[in-house]
Length: 82
Image 1 (cartoon, helix red, strand yellow):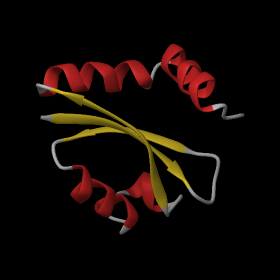
Image 2 (cartoon, one colour):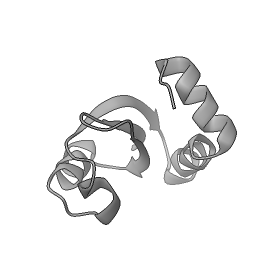
Image 3 (cartoon, one colour):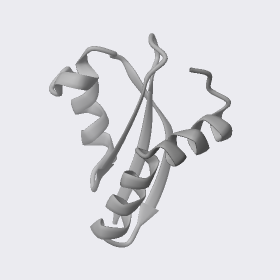
Image 4 (cartoon, one colour):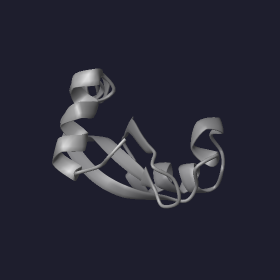
């Protein structure tokens, strides 16, 4: 099982979209400062998760959510501004 996830910074108006097979480990990595982009906006909370049977499907969804259309959808769903 693979998960496409959306994280939201608790202190900044930032979101992060990614894919993983182990969500607990991945969130721990983001909140421990192991990744250059996410360490600037720590701490992170899980905003949304989608489960997929294979990596290709999860990656396709991640790529869509990172497009302009995908970001608009996220803002619409989660009522974010900016």
